Length: 110
Image (cartoon, rainbow, N blue to C red):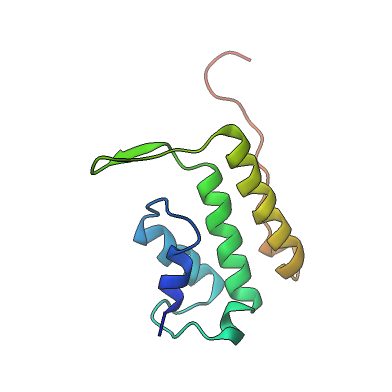
């Protein structure tokens, strides 16, 4: 039977670091080696973890690994963000469950 780890890894073919998946699971109260039952997969904790990973993917760098390239277009990144925010709207019980928008600038010039 598949585990929660298997289910989270299958969100996308991009090689998400295990540490990132582990951090998301801990934040959402999931145990990675628990069986991924229908109840778990339809639950709020899993939905929010999936949203976290989709949002992470929308900012992930384009990489080449072992002769395989992984990249996203700007449109794909926007689609990932939209899917993540849709999941937040469905599963977030309060504003603390949603990511915060951070504004700022990079560099020494405005």
